[in-house]
Structure formats: C-alpha cells, structure tokens
Length: 190
Image (cartoon, rainbow, N blue to C red; front, side, top):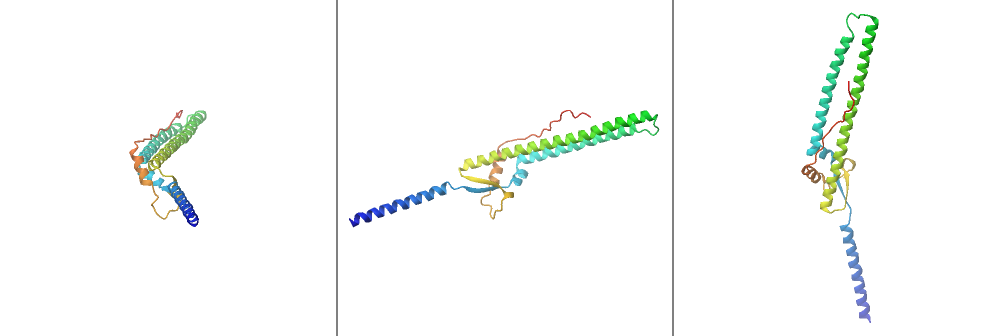
C-alpha cells in the first residue's frame, strides 16, 4: 500500500512538473518580443526614400523657377502700368487697377502652387509609410515571431539587439516599389 501511494505521488508530481515545463515552454514560444526601427535611417537610406527626396528637390526647383518667371513678368507689367508720364488720371488708374488684379492673381497662384506641392509631398510621405508598414509585416511574417514594433525615436533602448531597421531596409530596397510625386495643378492660370 505504501508503495502504491509513493508511486502515485511520484507520478502525480512528475505529471505536474511536465505540465508546468510544457506551459512555460509554450509561453516562451508565444512570448511577444519588442523590436524597433529607425524610420529616419530608412527614409534617408532607402532607394524609395532617396527617390522621394530627389523628386521633392526637383519639384521645389521647378516651383522656384516658375515663381521667379512669374515675378519677372509681374515686374515688367508693373513697369508698363506705371509709365514715367501718365496720360490721364483715368488711364493711369485703370492700368494700376489691372496691375493690382494681376498682383492678386500672382499671390493666389503662389499660394495654390505651394498648397499643391505640399499636398503632393504629404501624399508621397503617406504612401512611403504604407509601403514601409507592408515591408515590416512581410519581415515579421517571414520570421514567424510575435513582435511589437516601435519607432526608435519614440523609445529609449540600451542595445540594438532588437533593431530590425537593416532587415526592413533591405526588404524595402529589394521590393522594387516606386512613388512618383505628381502635383495636381488645376485652374492655376495667371
């Protein structure tokens, strides 16, 4: 009888120990890890990010060139509207009124072009973030890990062990994704 009780206790204890060990291992396998990405690094070093930066520089260069040309035209028209010897008061007043209208149109056009450019850049940035999220999910799916990802600038980390920036950067560079910044300019006649 004592042998039976001893055997029973030994079996019961072993089963509980194995169940506890299995539960602990299961928890370790399902544990959620924390990873970080350096968004700024990805934005600056990725092919897609560099493409957006180049397009933005070109767009701003074109914007500045267009505004310079429009301003030069406006100055020529101002000189023409402001002759050294005005004919009559009415003619002078009329030419100045036309010039002021053109000046107002120039200001409206400038604001509209800036707004269109800003919207195009924001759209490109939104698209970049969407593609980046897709690559992060692709990386996490491939590694089959439960991971919460934070942006590096929002977290204080003592080590880079959990930094998945380079892996995501490689996926993004190899994805072949492109973003084309296209400002939609409608009815901006001068």
